[in-house]
Length: 182
Image 1: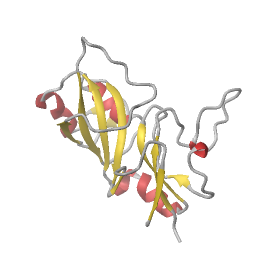
Image 2: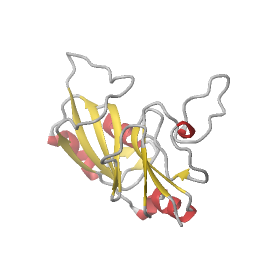
Image 3: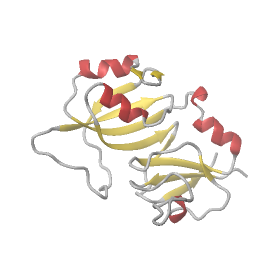
Image 4: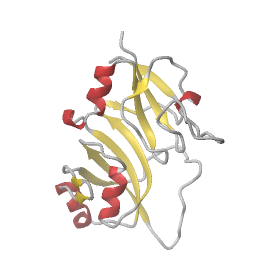
């Protein structure tokens, strides 16, 4: 039977089970998930948080991670500044980054979501406003959301992947996981 685990990856944790860096290894998934034979389907950067799917099924792993399957990935993104609808329009059309054009993204301004506190907290500056966006992508490049928001002039301060397809973080605490059916 296929095992599927939904993990709420904390900030600062690598999306792998070991860290070869010496002499001071960084936190990895092994400190959070003690289930043999499961591996991440895709990645989240160390400075990103949220949903990471782990499975023991290589075919499922490939379907989740491969952009050819166009599985929607939903991100809650805190950005520096207050973008207007016109500022976000290029993201909705697709922007050209150094590695080529992106697919169009679904982007809306949202109220600050009820999330766990991040450790360390996001830097706060009284003179620089920030706001939250919900961004849905159907591709997954290295640091893509961060590069896209910076491209339109609104650097990412905090990035939380909330959903992959129908799987969400709903009810999963920071650093916790839940097993679901495939």
